Image 1 (tube, one colour):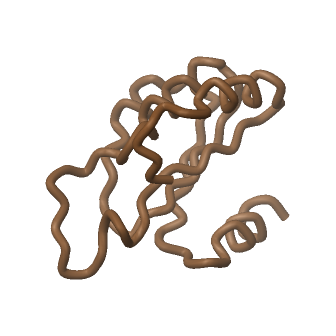
Image 2 (tube, rainbow, N blue to C red; image 1 turned 180 degrees about the vertical axis):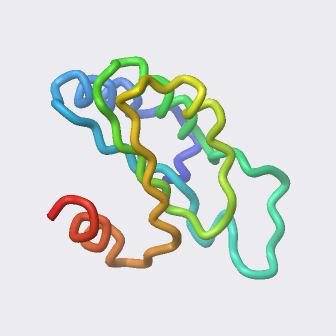
Length: 107
């Protein structure tokens, strides 16, 4: 989630183009935000905003799953979105995040 490079954005765009619905997981982990540690800004770290913008530009219905225990600035995602966007705040779900989100929203 915190990859600071633009690697694999083109692969994500290709996968989004081939999909009927896109599930895009974005967020932060304890390396970025933790109890007693202040952040200088609330932006998504690394290339995540570039990833989100590139995937949303494909125009497929998209579910953005935010994995975060702190505030995140996602104005650019919301502002660029089409009506086919859903945002799920998964909080800081721990190692069972994928299973929990899946059970809660897709079963």
